[in-house]
Length: 307
Image 1: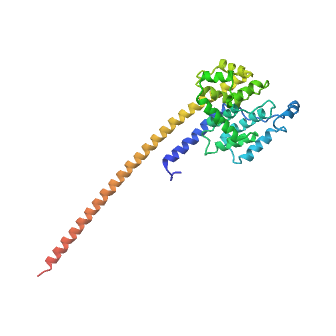
Image 2: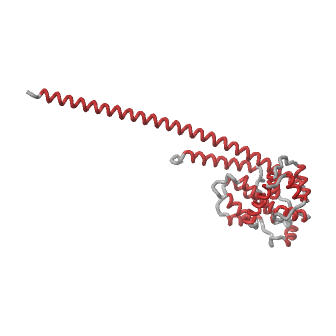
Image 3: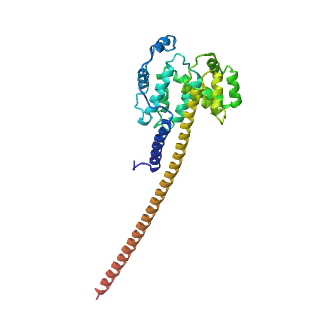
Protein backbone atom coordinates (compact mmCIF):
# COMPACT_ATOMS: atom_id res chain seq x y z
CA UNK A 1 0.00 0.00 0.00
CA UNK A 2 2.82 2.41 0.86
CA UNK A 3 4.24 2.02 -2.63
CA UNK A 4 0.99 3.05 -4.32
CA UNK A 5 -0.68 6.40 -4.89
CA UNK A 6 -1.17 8.02 -1.43
CA UNK A 7 -4.44 9.69 -2.48
CA UNK A 8 -5.88 6.34 -3.58
CA UNK A 9 -4.81 4.81 -0.27
CA UNK A 10 -6.60 7.52 1.71
CA UNK A 11 -9.72 7.19 -0.46
CA UNK A 12 -9.74 3.42 -0.03
CA UNK A 13 -9.39 3.66 3.75
CA UNK A 14 -12.09 6.30 3.90
CA UNK A 15 -14.46 4.12 1.86
CA UNK A 16 -13.83 1.16 4.13
CA UNK A 17 -14.56 3.36 7.15
CA UNK A 18 -17.71 4.69 5.45
CA UNK A 19 -18.84 1.17 4.56
CA UNK A 20 -18.75 0.00 8.17
CA UNK A 21 -20.38 3.21 9.35
CA UNK A 22 -23.25 2.72 6.89
CA UNK A 23 -23.74 -0.79 8.14
CA UNK A 24 -23.92 0.57 11.66
CA UNK A 25 -26.68 2.94 10.57
CA UNK A 26 -28.51 0.24 8.65
CA UNK A 27 -28.34 -2.16 11.59
CA UNK A 28 -31.06 -0.11 13.21
CA UNK A 29 -33.26 -0.72 10.17
CA UNK A 30 -33.10 -4.51 10.27
CA UNK A 31 -33.91 -6.90 13.05
CA UNK A 32 -31.25 -9.31 14.33
CA UNK A 33 -31.36 -12.55 12.33
CA UNK A 34 -33.40 -15.26 13.99
CA UNK A 35 -33.93 -18.94 13.33
CA UNK A 36 -37.34 -19.07 11.63
CA UNK A 37 -39.97 -21.37 13.07
CA UNK A 38 -41.58 -24.05 10.91
CA UNK A 39 -44.74 -22.94 9.11
CA UNK A 40 -47.92 -23.86 10.93
CA UNK A 41 -50.22 -26.56 9.59
CA UNK A 42 -53.01 -24.15 8.60
CA UNK A 43 -50.52 -22.03 6.66
CA UNK A 44 -49.42 -25.07 4.72
CA UNK A 45 -53.02 -26.03 4.02
CA UNK A 46 -53.98 -22.54 2.81
CA UNK A 47 -50.95 -22.48 0.56
CA UNK A 48 -52.64 -24.86 -1.87
CA UNK A 49 -53.83 -21.90 -3.95
CA UNK A 50 -50.59 -19.93 -3.78
CA UNK A 51 -48.56 -18.86 -6.77
CA UNK A 52 -45.70 -21.01 -5.47
CA UNK A 53 -46.85 -24.61 -5.93
CA UNK A 54 -45.09 -25.99 -2.87
CA UNK A 55 -44.30 -24.42 0.48
CA UNK A 56 -40.75 -23.18 0.29
CA UNK A 57 -38.73 -23.01 3.49
CA UNK A 58 -36.45 -20.19 4.54
CA UNK A 59 -33.54 -22.61 4.28
CA UNK A 60 -34.39 -23.32 0.64
CA UNK A 61 -34.62 -19.61 -0.14
CA UNK A 62 -31.26 -18.99 1.48
CA UNK A 63 -29.79 -21.92 -0.45
CA UNK A 64 -31.14 -20.43 -3.69
CA UNK A 65 -29.57 -17.10 -2.82
CA UNK A 66 -26.21 -18.78 -2.16
CA UNK A 67 -26.44 -20.59 -5.50
CA UNK A 68 -27.29 -17.33 -7.26
CA UNK A 69 -24.49 -15.43 -5.58
CA UNK A 70 -21.72 -17.80 -4.52
CA UNK A 71 -19.34 -15.10 -3.30
CA UNK A 72 -19.15 -14.64 0.48
CA UNK A 73 -21.08 -11.60 1.71
CA UNK A 74 -18.91 -9.00 3.42
CA UNK A 75 -19.36 -9.90 7.13
CA UNK A 76 -20.61 -6.47 8.14
CA UNK A 77 -23.47 -6.75 5.61
CA UNK A 78 -24.36 -10.38 6.24
CA UNK A 79 -27.02 -9.72 8.88
CA UNK A 80 -28.70 -7.11 6.67
CA UNK A 81 -28.91 -9.48 3.72
CA UNK A 82 -30.07 -12.43 5.79
CA UNK A 83 -32.73 -10.43 7.61
CA UNK A 84 -34.05 -8.91 4.39
CA UNK A 85 -34.09 -12.34 2.78
CA UNK A 86 -35.82 -13.97 5.75
CA UNK A 87 -38.51 -11.38 6.42
CA UNK A 88 -39.34 -10.96 2.73
CA UNK A 89 -39.46 -14.74 2.26
CA UNK A 90 -42.06 -15.02 5.03
CA UNK A 91 -44.21 -12.47 3.21
CA UNK A 92 -43.54 -14.11 -0.15
CA UNK A 93 -44.82 -17.55 0.84
CA UNK A 94 -47.99 -16.11 2.39
CA UNK A 95 -50.93 -16.72 0.07
CA UNK A 96 -52.01 -13.08 0.50
CA UNK A 97 -48.77 -11.77 -1.00
CA UNK A 98 -49.06 -10.04 -4.37
CA UNK A 99 -46.10 -8.61 -6.23
CA UNK A 100 -46.55 -5.09 -7.64
CA UNK A 101 -44.34 -2.23 -8.91
CA UNK A 102 -44.48 -0.45 -5.53
CA UNK A 103 -42.90 -3.52 -3.92
CA UNK A 104 -40.26 -3.46 -6.67
CA UNK A 105 -39.56 0.20 -5.94
CA UNK A 106 -39.17 -0.58 -2.23
CA UNK A 107 -36.62 -3.31 -2.89
CA UNK A 108 -34.69 -1.03 -5.23
CA UNK A 109 -34.72 1.75 -2.63
CA UNK A 110 -33.33 -0.52 0.10
CA UNK A 111 -30.31 -1.36 -2.03
CA UNK A 112 -29.92 2.22 -3.27
CA UNK A 113 -29.77 3.58 0.28
CA UNK A 114 -28.20 0.88 2.42
CA UNK A 115 -25.83 -0.84 -0.01
CA UNK A 116 -24.31 2.23 -1.68
CA UNK A 117 -20.99 1.68 0.10
CA UNK A 118 -20.80 -2.08 -0.40
CA UNK A 119 -17.18 -2.87 -1.37
CA UNK A 120 -16.60 -3.36 -5.07
CA UNK A 121 -19.51 -3.37 -7.50
CA UNK A 122 -21.41 -6.41 -6.23
CA UNK A 123 -24.41 -4.67 -4.64
CA UNK A 124 -26.41 -4.98 -7.87
CA UNK A 125 -25.49 -8.68 -8.15
CA UNK A 126 -26.61 -9.29 -4.58
CA UNK A 127 -29.92 -7.56 -5.32
CA UNK A 128 -30.51 -9.74 -8.37
CA UNK A 129 -29.59 -12.91 -6.48
CA UNK A 130 -31.88 -12.00 -3.58
CA UNK A 131 -34.88 -11.17 -5.77
CA UNK A 132 -34.40 -14.37 -7.77
CA UNK A 133 -34.14 -16.40 -4.56
CA UNK A 134 -37.62 -15.08 -3.70
CA UNK A 135 -38.85 -16.57 -6.99
CA UNK A 136 -39.38 -13.18 -8.57
CA UNK A 137 -38.13 -11.88 -11.92
CA UNK A 138 -35.21 -9.59 -11.07
CA UNK A 139 -35.16 -7.99 -14.53
CA UNK A 140 -38.87 -7.24 -14.40
CA UNK A 141 -38.60 -5.92 -10.84
CA UNK A 142 -35.82 -3.52 -11.86
CA UNK A 143 -37.82 -2.37 -14.88
CA UNK A 144 -40.95 -1.85 -12.74
CA UNK A 145 -39.01 0.17 -10.17
CA UNK A 146 -37.59 2.36 -12.95
CA UNK A 147 -41.07 2.88 -14.42
CA UNK A 148 -42.46 3.99 -11.06
CA UNK A 149 -39.53 6.35 -10.50
CA UNK A 150 -40.04 7.93 -13.92
CA UNK A 151 -43.74 8.38 -13.20
CA UNK A 152 -43.03 9.90 -9.78
CA UNK A 153 -40.77 12.58 -11.27
CA UNK A 154 -43.78 14.44 -12.68
CA UNK A 155 -46.08 13.95 -9.69
CA UNK A 156 -46.75 16.20 -6.73
CA UNK A 157 -48.61 15.52 -3.48
CA UNK A 158 -51.99 16.34 -4.99
CA UNK A 159 -51.35 14.15 -8.02
CA UNK A 160 -50.27 11.24 -5.83
CA UNK A 161 -53.38 11.45 -3.67
CA UNK A 162 -55.61 11.76 -6.73
CA UNK A 163 -54.10 8.59 -8.15
CA UNK A 164 -54.78 6.65 -4.95
CA UNK A 165 -58.34 7.97 -4.87
CA UNK A 166 -59.04 7.31 -8.54
CA UNK A 167 -56.37 4.99 -9.98
CA UNK A 168 -55.55 5.22 -13.66
CA UNK A 169 -54.39 2.44 -15.97
CA UNK A 170 -50.68 3.14 -15.49
CA UNK A 171 -48.23 0.97 -13.60
CA UNK A 172 -48.83 2.57 -10.21
CA UNK A 173 -52.56 3.08 -10.81
CA UNK A 174 -53.03 -0.57 -11.78
CA UNK A 175 -51.18 -1.68 -8.64
CA UNK A 176 -53.40 0.52 -6.47
CA UNK A 177 -56.52 -0.83 -8.17
CA UNK A 178 -55.41 -4.41 -7.50
CA UNK A 179 -54.66 -3.61 -3.85
CA UNK A 180 -58.04 -1.94 -3.33
CA UNK A 181 -59.78 -4.95 -4.89
CA UNK A 182 -57.95 -7.43 -2.65
CA UNK A 183 -59.75 -7.75 0.70
CA UNK A 184 -56.86 -9.48 2.41
CA UNK A 185 -53.94 -7.53 0.95
CA UNK A 186 -50.70 -8.40 2.77
CA UNK A 187 -48.79 -5.29 3.74
CA UNK A 188 -45.02 -5.85 4.06
CA UNK A 189 -42.04 -3.65 4.83
CA UNK A 190 -40.59 -3.64 1.31
CA UNK A 191 -43.92 -2.39 -0.05
CA UNK A 192 -43.97 0.24 2.70
CA UNK A 193 -40.55 1.53 1.70
CA UNK A 194 -41.80 1.84 -1.87
CA UNK A 195 -44.62 4.03 -0.56
CA UNK A 196 -42.19 6.14 1.48
CA UNK A 197 -40.15 6.73 -1.67
CA UNK A 198 -43.30 7.85 -3.52
CA UNK A 199 -44.10 10.29 -0.71
CA UNK A 200 -40.60 11.75 -0.87
CA UNK A 201 -40.56 12.04 -4.65
CA UNK A 202 -43.97 13.74 -4.58
CA UNK A 203 -42.45 16.43 -2.38
CA UNK A 204 -44.42 15.57 0.74
CA UNK A 205 -42.31 17.17 3.47
CA UNK A 206 -44.33 16.09 6.50
CA UNK A 207 -44.91 12.36 6.70
CA UNK A 208 -46.74 11.74 9.95
CA UNK A 209 -49.15 9.16 11.34
CA UNK A 210 -52.14 11.02 9.93
CA UNK A 211 -50.75 10.83 6.40
CA UNK A 212 -49.75 7.18 6.77
CA UNK A 213 -53.15 6.26 8.22
CA UNK A 214 -54.91 8.11 5.38
CA UNK A 215 -53.04 6.17 2.70
CA UNK A 216 -53.40 2.88 4.58
CA UNK A 217 -57.15 3.47 4.67
CA UNK A 218 -57.20 4.28 0.96
CA UNK A 219 -55.62 0.88 0.27
CA UNK A 220 -57.52 -1.03 2.92
CA UNK A 221 -54.88 -2.20 5.39
CA UNK A 222 -54.00 -1.31 8.96
CA UNK A 223 -51.79 1.73 9.39
CA UNK A 224 -50.08 0.52 12.58
CA UNK A 225 -47.31 -1.50 10.93
CA UNK A 226 -47.07 1.15 8.22
CA UNK A 227 -46.33 3.76 10.89
CA UNK A 228 -43.86 1.54 12.74
CA UNK A 229 -41.93 0.82 9.55
CA UNK A 230 -41.79 4.50 8.64
CA UNK A 231 -40.45 5.43 12.08
CA UNK A 232 -37.76 2.74 11.78
CA UNK A 233 -36.93 3.63 8.18
CA UNK A 234 -36.76 7.41 8.73
CA UNK A 235 -34.62 6.95 11.84
CA UNK A 236 -32.23 4.72 9.91
CA UNK A 237 -32.01 7.24 7.06
CA UNK A 238 -31.30 10.04 9.54
CA UNK A 239 -28.41 8.00 10.93
CA UNK A 240 -27.30 7.30 7.39
CA UNK A 241 -27.25 11.01 6.46
CA UNK A 242 -25.27 11.78 9.61
CA UNK A 243 -22.74 9.10 8.71
CA UNK A 244 -22.47 10.43 5.15
CA UNK A 245 -21.78 13.93 6.48
CA UNK A 246 -19.17 12.52 8.84
CA UNK A 247 -17.57 10.68 5.94
CA UNK A 248 -17.38 13.89 3.90
CA UNK A 249 -15.72 15.67 6.80
CA UNK A 250 -13.28 12.79 7.30
CA UNK A 251 -12.48 12.71 3.58
CA UNK A 252 -11.87 16.48 3.47
CA UNK A 253 -9.70 16.29 6.59
CA UNK A 254 -7.70 13.37 5.21
CA UNK A 255 -7.19 15.15 1.90
CA UNK A 256 -5.91 18.22 3.72
CA UNK A 257 -3.55 16.08 5.78
CA UNK A 258 -2.35 14.33 2.63
CA UNK A 259 -1.82 17.68 0.87
CA UNK A 260 0.13 18.97 3.87
CA UNK A 261 2.30 15.82 3.95
CA UNK A 262 2.95 16.04 0.21
CA UNK A 263 3.78 19.74 0.51
CA UNK A 264 6.16 19.03 3.39
CA UNK A 265 7.73 16.18 1.44
CA UNK A 266 8.12 18.41 -1.62
CA UNK A 267 9.70 21.17 0.50
CA UNK A 268 12.17 18.71 2.02
CA UNK A 269 12.96 17.36 -1.43
CA UNK A 270 13.56 20.90 -2.68
CA UNK A 271 15.81 21.64 0.28
CA UNK A 272 17.71 18.41 -0.30
CA UNK A 273 18.07 19.23 -4.01
CA UNK A 274 19.29 22.75 -3.21
CA UNK A 275 21.78 21.40 -0.66
CA UNK A 276 23.00 18.80 -3.14
CA UNK A 277 23.35 21.46 -5.82
CA UNK A 278 25.30 23.72 -3.47
CA UNK A 279 27.48 20.83 -2.42
CA UNK A 280 28.13 19.89 -6.05
CA UNK A 281 28.95 23.53 -6.90
CA UNK A 282 31.31 23.74 -3.95
CA UNK A 283 33.00 20.49 -4.95
CA UNK A 284 33.29 21.72 -8.54
CA UNK A 285 34.81 25.03 -7.41
CA UNK A 286 37.18 23.17 -5.13
CA UNK A 287 38.20 20.85 -7.94
CA UNK A 288 38.68 23.80 -10.28
CA UNK A 289 40.81 25.59 -7.70
CA UNK A 290 42.84 22.44 -7.14
CA UNK A 291 43.42 22.08 -10.87
CA UNK A 292 44.45 25.71 -11.16
CA UNK A 293 46.83 25.34 -8.18
CA UNK A 294 48.35 22.19 -9.64
CA UNK A 295 48.94 24.03 -12.94
CA UNK A 296 50.65 26.90 -11.17
CA UNK A 297 52.89 24.58 -9.22
CA UNK A 298 53.81 22.69 -12.34
CA UNK A 299 54.63 25.95 -14.09
CA UNK A 300 56.85 27.07 -11.22
CA UNK A 301 58.73 23.79 -11.16
CA UNK A 302 59.28 24.06 -14.89
CA UNK A 303 60.64 27.59 -14.56
CA UNK A 304 62.91 26.70 -11.65
CA UNK A 305 64.38 23.77 -13.56
CA UNK A 306 65.59 25.97 -16.43
CA UNK A 307 69.32 27.11 -16.42
